[in-house]
Length: 113
Length: 115
Image 1 (tube, helix red, strand yellow):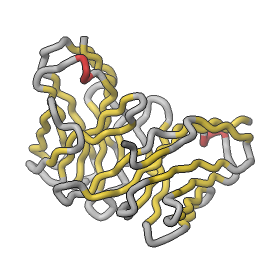
Image 2 (tube, rainbow over the protein chains, first blue to last red):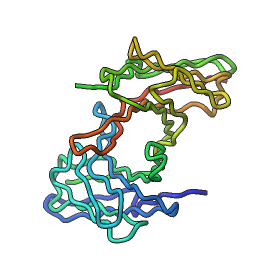
Image 3 (cartoon, helix red, strand yellow):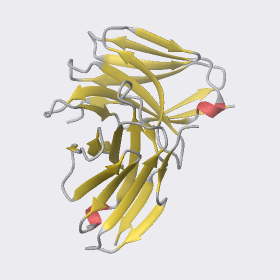
Image 4 (cartoon, each protein chain N blue to C red):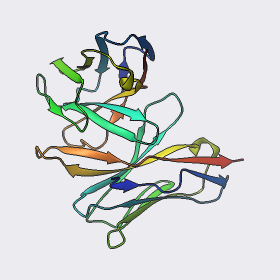
């Protein structure tokens, strides 16, 4: 059974803290994605990666960075968390050939106070 | 400015009947359309796709219809089952400024199938 796992289901951080969200997939997928989901705004792409050490900005990269040192792992970093980064964060992966068939993790609900 | 719109936030149908979920889009350059399903406390799950060169794709109880002239697609579920109760997202594939593909998502329609 294919799997995308995220390091935490719930996370509470303080304003200004550095936050790491980890995502691991076991499907040997080339593509990995980070989204955030907010009421009334839907899923918005933050960053994606189509290969190890490669990254591309999505629609809302400001305030975020990413790291992909190994094929199976894609990390989202909030350099200095702010309250407007309180959201549901979803990681996904897909193969090169069927890039649109994205497999999602369960999500991390991040609250920044 | 939403390029992919799901105008019905919710839909309720009886078990055994047909569920029809609708999606409208504005960009004629979209080349793939997808439907995803999401249960509470889980990430979205890919359901079915359709290429812009086709007008219908069927997979078991699920059929997606594409009307390019109307810029409209719909997902039909026949017969509907209580386990189909979930939020359904419509998404479309486009190229971004860097010539990479990305998905543009609708806001979702919450389907309730009543026994």
